[in-house]
Every structure is written in C-alpha cells, then in structure tokens.
Image 1 (cartoon, rainbow over the protein chains, first blue to last red):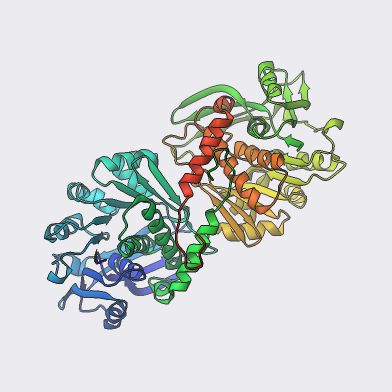
Image 2 (cartoon, chains in turn red, brown; image 1 turned 60 degrees about the horizontal axis):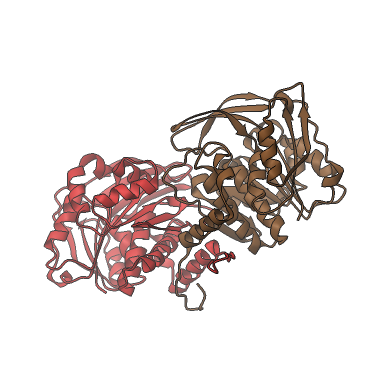
Length: 311
Length: 311
C-alpha cells in the first residue's frame, strides 16, 4: 500500500472575509500528505523546500509516517510562497503574490526506496515535473492520480496534455474542467477529457460537492453544508489526499470503491476549511473522520420505494 | 389527498443560448399542476387567466385531473406575460418584459369544493394573494408549502413576512435564502428563516441540487448531471409540484418522506429543463419518472464501511 505524493511544500499568506492568516505552512503535497496519512503510511513525499521551512513542520510530518527522503532541501534558497485573497463566496480568489524560489529550478529525483510504490498522487505542480516523476518510476504504479490547475492550461498546455495521456484519474475543479474541454456542460466536459487520457475524471465543485465520472457512470458527493467556510485553501489537495489515501489503504481501485474514496476526500476537505491552513488537519482523530463520514451518509441517505424493488 | 395549487398561469417568451421559445405557456401554477398531477389527482387549481389563454391548454390540464373551477377567466384582459433571457450558466437570467394584465387586480376566490383540502401549495405570487387564500380556508391544511422570489422581498417584505408565519415549508433558491436571511452561509440562512415561521426550509441550488433543512437535520439531493440544460424556466415550480404531489399522494409529512419528496421534485425538474416550457412535462410517463428516480439513487449511492456498522 505504498504511495508517492508529488507536489509543493510552501508558505502561504491568506486573506479571507474572516481575517488574515499571516505566513503559514501550505503547499499541495503538504495537504495531500496530512490527509492521506490518516489512511495509509508511509507516505513517500517528493517535493522541494528552502532553508526557511520549519523543522518542526517536517518533524510533525515524519511523526505521521511521511517519508521525507524525497524532499530536497535547498539551503541557499527560500521555499515557494503564495499569497491570495478570497472573496465572499469563497469559490473565487485572487493571487496577490507568487514567489517561485526553490521551485524555479526544481528537478524531482525519485529515491530508490520509493521505487515499486503502487499509488502515485501527482499534486498540483508544473506538468513537466509531474511527467519527470512518472518517467523515473521503473514500474508503472497501479493507479496514477493527477491534480492540476488553470495556470498550467494557460502556460504549459502541451506538457499538460502529455501527462494526461499517462494518468488514470484527473482531478480538476469545474471551471478548469470547462477550460480544458471547451465544454460548458460538466457531463460533456468529462467526456472530452476522457479522450485526452484519464479513464476517471473527478470534478470538484467546492461547496457544491464533487462528481466522479467513469464511462457512462457518474457519482455525486455533496460537500457538507457548513455554517462557515473559514479558509478554503488546500481543500482540493486535502480532498485528493483523502481520495488516494483511501484507495492506497484498501488497494481496491474499482469504481465502487472510488465512490467511497470521494466521500473520504470530501470528509477530510470539510475539516480543512474550518481553520486556516493545515491547523484543522493536525487536530482530527480517526473518530472525528468516522463521525464526519457518517454525516455524509446521513446527508444523502433516502429510502424511496421503486416498483423494481431497488432504492 | 386533496391538494390546492395557487399561482400564475401565463405566457412566457424565453431566450436561452440554445434559441428562442416564442410565446409559450408558462406560469408557476401551470408547472406545479403538471408536476403534481403525476402523483395526486385532483389538483385544485387556483389562478387567473385572460381571454387569450388557449382552450386546448385548459383541456390538457383537465385531462390530467386538474380542477379548473378556481381559475378565474377575465374575458376583457390578457393573461400575465413574462419574457426573460438566460445567460450561459443558466443559473442567472434577465427579465426582458413583464405585463401583469389579469394579475393587476387579481383577487383569488377559493371555491367551496376546494374547502377541506389537506395540502396547499402556494406557488410564486404576490404574498398578499397567498395570504388571502390561507385566510379563506375554513380548515387549516395539514401542510402549507410556499414558494416565493426576490422580487417580493424587494417590494412586499411585510406581506411576505406575514405569510411566512403561516406556512410549514418555504422553498427559495440560494440567492433568495441569502437575501431573506441576511446570511451568506446557507446553513445559517436556514436557521434565520426558521425563526420567521417555516419549520422546513428547502433551498434550491439549480444545477447544484437542493437542501432540505428541519431542526438540526439536513438532507441534500443533487441535480442530475445533464449534458444540456435547455431551458430552466419552471424548473423550480416543477420541483415544488413534484414535492407537494408526492407528499399529498402519500399523506406522510415526516422528514424521512420529505427527503423522498425532494428526490421526486428533483427528478421531475430534471425533465422540465430538457425542452422549452412545459413540453417535456406533457411527454413523460410514470415509467420515465421511475427510471429517473432510479438514476438519482444510483448517482448518490455508496456503501462505505463504518465501524458502527452503518453506512
């Protein structure tokens, strides 16, 4: 049940209608690791940090069973930094600042002890680097899941298309699915994206839940209706971590089990947004997760009588 | 299982990115009646039309078991007319024209043979007229469901608040729930609206599904992911008709059965949007509805193992 997680480990500075975070820990691989490690250990982390990344954050991850031998430390450079501001609806945000720092010349190297991993989570990162990781693996993983974003569609579409041909599952949000496919209807978008490579498409709709497409099958998981979404940063990465973590732990990549993975991802994401950054992810217990999953069951459960006896 | 439906019967002219409808039949009570009559007959219709409302449309409704003795015909006036244009996302629309005509001086009169009805659906209409109907009923119905819209919040808030005190279920869309409550979070909005009177709140989110709130309980029904939403006009009224029709047919107003009513409403609404106006509602059979409900079951069904044995 070995899992490689590729992505950024970074600093974020977040503004929401509820306040400012100051400089806090972020990065796609950070969130994925915190989420996935609830279900599967070790998590083989592949990333890059600068001299300024706090040792206690690395220690906390190691204590969670996150392997850091694939995390390069560039002693002369600063960690990747992103600053952003959310609007009232929390579904849209403006980037205020991006400092690539260590990412500018990052070249991921897969350590020998990561070889043979059965699951690969390509967190949001330059597509060329995602591809470099795939190419370094001596054995193709059982399942490759890829997250990406509109920025790469605008700036590195050829590289992105090349990676898409290699992955099993693509995760994007609704506007990214529309941009990538040129289709407004998400059903049509998923069909178009399937032609680009991935057999499974997960479309994340933020507070409106997530859709999982495979062939003619579609599964819908709601987001938990929350009193407040405090900070959506990392919710998508946390969702991805819960998704791949559940699959890696169960080693079952059937569509039926992917539904459960979507629910687990949604449950973890619903914690993530309750506080700034990774704060909430560090607090939750297995019992908290179990209780939250039960809330999802209750939220969508209905018992309707159909004349064919199903329902 | 008698049901009174109050609302407009009208002409619409609709523009969508897919085309123009020309002048077609619309109105909140028209859609409610077409939807509810799939489950319960008679539907006791309370509305007003002008000399120009087509007799074949009235005949079609009568053939469905819709009682028209409560529909006033004003021989000197034209029927209510609304023209609107949808944007690409189909969730927002501009009103191009509104001609009140018969509605300007409408005073609903409840016929004697409607008295004693157990279910009342107050379709979208001036709140003062909704109230007038409630006051005319000699016996309070078992369940009163009210639909309304932002226009009445802007222009007749006092009247609206008065009606809210009298109803059991309020149906609004997400932006209306936010406007009515002053809360952005829909969870908080439902709590605020509950203080205004209704014990049950249904928040319709268009392509993002619907939420049903009661006390601390919440149920979520997705919208069916469709390749195309052709025309969303009447989808909310159709949802309301399916909802109240199912409740009136089963005479069970428990929260559990309201979940099923939400699913039935969602299923009917998913047909409504497939063609202009009421076209699709006139075509569908019981078997079509059953099959569509099964699609909703399949869409949200998952079987997750929890240590408490539920799921």
